[in-house]
Image (cartoon, rainbow, N blue to C red):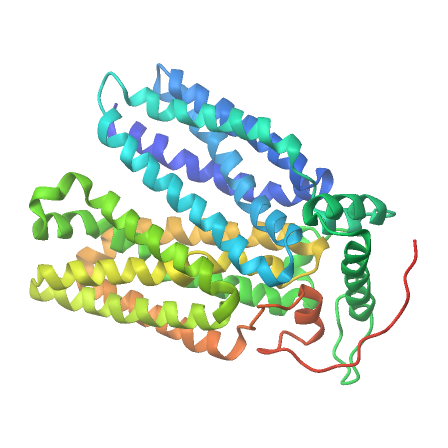
Length: 430
């Protein structure tokens, strides 16, 4: 396969992912979280099947484009689905489990490829995607639809109550109390704070991407979403991974074939630790610590590359990946459903993923050129400086969402910590 065709086969997945991300909000709000996941299983399964059986580069591109579409949609849907199904006291843990599943999937693919990356077996790796799509399609009928999504629909509280009963497995009274808490939050969000700050009203009208981008009432969450996504990509995580194999092979020549697996194991361990800490320490503090450690490790990596200190470079790479896994890995998508009301979650996630993919593509495309212009080590100084600037901005605007409903965060004007206010007390009966 010529290099030009190979590049197209690789990049078409990203193109499909971007289109999937931009269209996900429509399907997510129109058909619900669970039904949309059924559709993505179809895209992922068919895409994997086509690539498994592909006999030409064009067929391979078609399969990867369909897989990209499905990946883009599912990356938007899953964080919203999880955040809307679990109690707010456990959102951080379950949200990080999504990132953990991604890390496990990457590590499993790397382990499988160690034995199947041969001329006779490489198609088996792609065939695993078909099996996973079938398995998830068989499991999804046992899952409930998002109770908060159902409650946001006209007359949807009865269906939300049934869904919540299945999820919680508790008494009707406890479920009713949780639903009434949602109603009070939504009622409070429809009012204006005494200081005159406008608050987003709870309605049954979904917010599309254009409204999310253009409306002044979503300006603050938009800035925070951009901050989170750009921090993840401008940290230089992909550049570090790019250099990891060559650097680690020099330090550990006898393990050159399994270096990526070892790095994934570090990523896995630290992601598990992140899941444990997320609802205890909080998103804001983990983000700041994670980004700060990544800045230090990135600067250390740049210095060690320039000086030829391979062992120090290896330590910096491991520290960088570990710091990424504990904060900047899971937090950008975990926090989005905690920043906006249910009707705007899909569009906010779509915008977030689109920014993430576009910035990823831009940085990956410019990385080699920057490396050649300013030097191998200096490029990591640039990443470190960029991340430092974003850390300073985050210190002043990133709210702590641990244990807070999205309505509380909105009502507080995106204050860094919860504000005291007098909630509206109403009795709700349906």
